[in-house]
Image (cartoon, rainbow over all chains, first blue to last red):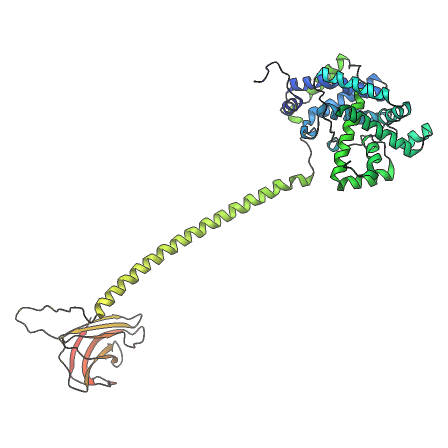
Amino acid sequence: MPDPGAKPNDSSLVVAVRAGDEHAMAELYDRYSAIVYSVALRVLGDTGGAEDILQEVFMQLWRNPGLFDSSRGNLAPWLAVIARNRAIDALRKRRPETDIEDVVVSVETDMAGEADRAMAMGKVRSVLSAMPAAQRSALEMAYFEGLSHSEISAKTGEPLGTIKTRIRTGLLALRKAFAA
Amino acid sequence: MSTHEQFADDLALYALGALPGEECVALERHLGECASCRRELATLRGDTALLALSTGGPRPPLRSRQRLREAIAREPRSRVAPRSRPWWALVPVLAAGVLAVLAALFWTQNSSLRRQVAILNERTLRQQAELQRTREIVSTLTATNAMTVTLVAAKTPPQPQGKVMYMKDRGSLIFLASNIPPVPSQKAYELWLIPMKGAPMAAGMFKPDAHGSAMVLNPPLPAGMEAKAFAVTIEPESGSSTPTMPIVMVGGE
């Protein structure tokens, strides 16, 4: 028997948003605004810009909830990827380069609950802190600064191949931690 | 690993948007053809999303929530743009529409054909019944073992009589005779069609049987010949081109 006190999952909230339910939209905002805002703030280093990204990402979801396909991934990582990409675009003062429809994010980690998010956050920080500094730095430059591998190579003086490998193995280390 | 090894590093960079120029173009071309690399890209994006969690902490100011609510309130739901789809996404819909139209067309044609078949069947049955009835009549008329009785006034000797059924349009003729006296040897009766204009036309030879009955069925006559009367004469067995007097039987409309 379903728990009457249980919160609706992301998919049912997105369905409600499609029907124009503002309360469902508010629920999704309360769940994921911190992820969207914090990643935008980390990229831009500016609260006003981060708020603009936050507004833009959630208005996109409100206008086109169909852009998110629940069969292709969870909402939280999808929002995080969209927010990060938009923030990088804003940082580089360029037009959005990635079509939201093309973004498919596959991650099984449940982030719908606050406790789930806190646990995932601790795990990510733990993995990053366990990485060699050069690898963590390469990952962060690519992710939060939007630098290409050649730009990172130029900045660090490391060979291109090394940067590529560090970034990939860093991402795989994160994946492995959540697969365990 | 399911992805292609040579693209593994590039895929990770691509997921981060960190793969520039020609390498990016080459990888996108490969992604268009390789499902396993597309799956790996989706998983790598999920990995990058985990990186976003490392920033967790600062929450947006309350005014952001209010700002979003106001923006949503200003934007009527009816103005919400539908998800744009590429033209080819409509192909199944269009195909279904075309199929529905064709199905309706075929259904209509099928119904029309069924009606026509039903009409033809009914007509065939009617004609078969008519044919059967005609066969029975002809069979009775032509049967050698059929009992033929002519009723006349009591104490009156039976008189020779003949009956002609003639269809001018088809040139079809049936002649039935009864109480016909025998003819001398090498002689026979000859039936004549006497037209409205012109000379009498031979319409068949006959000899009575032992009971005095005789019959002529469909002698060679041209179609459309208007008959004024019919007559019977006695002629040589080989027939004559003109009637030989006297006329032994005659009748007209």
